[in-house]
Amino acid sequence: MSEVQYENNEIVGQQCFQSSFMYSKPAEELRDCSGIVDPRYINRGVFRIYSPSKVLIKETFINDDELLAQFEYHDNSEPSTIKLFRQGEIIFFKRWNPEGIEIIDDPDPSGLFSSWDYYLNGNVKYKVTYMGIEKKEKHGIEWSYYNDRTWEKINLFYRGELKLSRKWTHGASISVDTLYQDGKKVYVN
Image 1 (cartoon, rainbow, N blue to C red):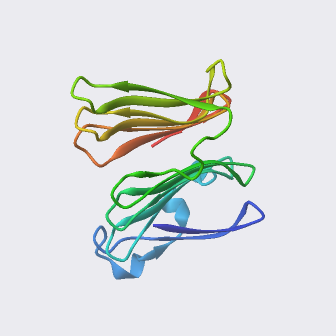
Image 2 (image 1 turned 90 degrees about the horizontal axis):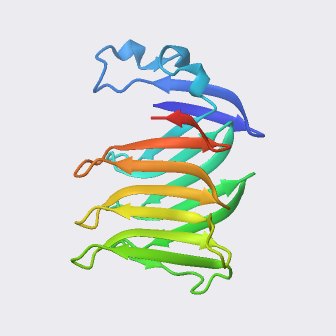
């Protein structure tokens, strides 16, 4: 785990901690981050916050020292909120209740149109949101689901530009996250 302090979008301090589950030397609990974290990725990556009971609470995605996105979770591990940021401002967000049902804050967002595809059993297979009448620019979240309604992949778009992609292997809780900048991959974990 690392603790990074920011001031005006710049790193001003950091400490890294080793889990007692992974390392048996208590004297090495607090370490210099350079021995743990590759300094090239301090300004880019996925930073996770867990509860004391080891439940994921929040994931923050940083790209070039700027907040890109945040995923927040309910106590039962269901997604609570997904936010996409641009220059520190929220430019897109979705919310869900603890049962996984989407909370519709704006039932008719102007200029946004969704397209759906379904499996033969009626479960959602794919959903995407476009901006503009011609449906040429993906904007917001693009979802792909496995047949059992679990998430396969989500992509976050801003005005047609892919910003973040997350893919799950079926049945696994671990995902692969890819950050994009100007249409190119800049980080994969």
